[in-house]
Image 1 (tube, one colour):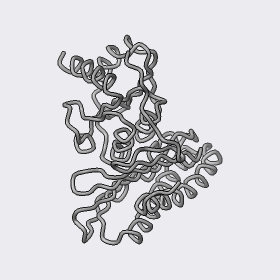
Image 2: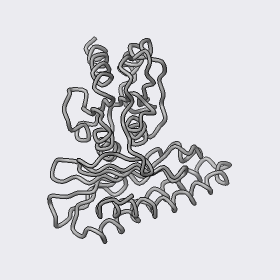
Image 3: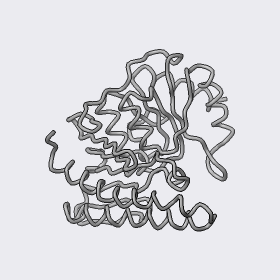
Image 4: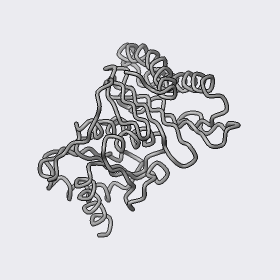
Length: 265
């Protein structure tokens, strides 16, 4: 399948960094005997992948800005375009040898995300989307699931961990939603949760306190697959607010209603 030059640039960068991460994943098992060793190793793998991505993207599109999880913001001469990159989304999964992690690359033009690539090198699943051109998984066109009743749906969520997030609020949200759905899932990589919504594997997803690099690529994927993505105030730029709700029109609306009610109590 033919893709635009922009998507080809993003895919090439993701695949090269992905080969590095896949080699690193193979080393994790040998490091599990040490508590300190794996964490340090993963941190280095994360940083190495980001530098590879920066080098490839800068070479292909000189002057674009770059916002990465590891290195922060790097200003470019082109003030209208910026890459938003997570070199290893799902770090804890990676640390434990769980093959649910991804490289996430998005491109913002001014305040709009125009393209996204999410790549899981562990299973070679490549999700791509470009504004106005659809969303794809390994060249197969994606559509969000069509289920309209929460009782038929599997919903993904974030799960605040020690020292982060409002645990009491999450428990209230989870209780309200858990009683109404076929199942709840927590996979540990926000970009892949959004990719799964775009692919129809999940019917909906919500999470709070995310960063732009967690959200940006998945946002365009879901929208190009016919889904709805907003923050919890129905704003259309959740990658700036950090809170996200995604699904088809019906499930997105139902989740927003339940989450708003839980937060107001």
